[in-house]
Image (cartoon, rainbow, N blue to C red; front, side, top):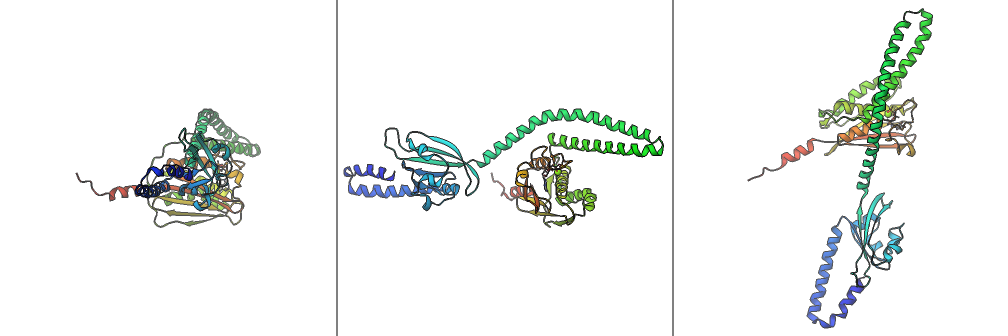
Length: 388
Ligand SMILES: Nc1ncnc2c1ncn2[C@@H]1O[C@H](COP(=O)(O)OP(=O)(O)OP(=O)(O)O)[C@@H](O)[C@H]1O
Ligand SMILES: [Mg+2]
């Protein structure tokens, strides 16, 4: 491509004064340097590809996207640097412009969108192609999140109705069981014993159904967080207190490694307690005694507070990991499969995120990230007053 431009210039050289040639050449060199700096400062990847398919230029962003270096790529065939597409076909026709998505797995898994456009004007000879590459990973993820939330709202509509309808007969069942229990008390002791067992089972099952229903309604009808300034460690202690009987019967050792410089956060205490309760319950449910251990750590950065819960339980297999946030996905006999979904929703509504790491037979770490609210205020206060 470069030679074609120069060739054109050379054919016209005889019409130009020698002094002018010198000036022209140094201007060309200066402009090339300028353009190169512009190309290098782009966040988009930029590649110049000759009509033979050889890369004649690649900027730093391009190198980063494709895990290569300029030395390696310049002079190499595009097909050897970016594999998996029929480049001969794509750059074979000098008149067509192509825009496509491309998934790359090295150096990291990203979705890229590239735009391949011929450099030549209509009647000019083939000068190759320019290729602009953008990282669209985050917008793809946003779209996936939108689809997920759409799926969820369709589910919501249907399920809220059904759940409501189940709630009423459930209440009435529970009432009738209480009446039955009262009547049973008037029977002889022997009859009472056998009937009592059946009654207890039925009451337990109804309670279980009621919990499932409550969890379910919470998952599909989220309420906006009622925030107040709160101490995350205090909420953690409250959640641990609620779970104390379960932790003690399973003989689980809980170790706290909490930061001493925890900023106060703007949180809905009830919701965060519910999230921690669900996560700690998941942790001990994954542990088979003896030697069960749960370690809870917290740390604060300038931007956020992280609280992690590590267990030495069964861990999560890669197949299950892909589905842990799916509604109703559970590996437990009496689980609803809604716990993590609720936790993630609560965190997102607080502007935070949930991260899960797990290794089979070693254990699982779930980390909650909550944004700091004080950071922004301090920055505003630091601003010098505006003089008018
Ligand atoms: N700490 C953990 N260790 C191992 N597996 C886990 C852990 N946390 C979650 N899981 C897996 O993720 C699945 C989904 O968890 P989630 O809390 O959403 O529902 P559940 O615990 O099954 O039901 P529920 O929370 O209603 O009791 C679990 O069934 C389990 O397989
Ligand atoms: Mg759970």
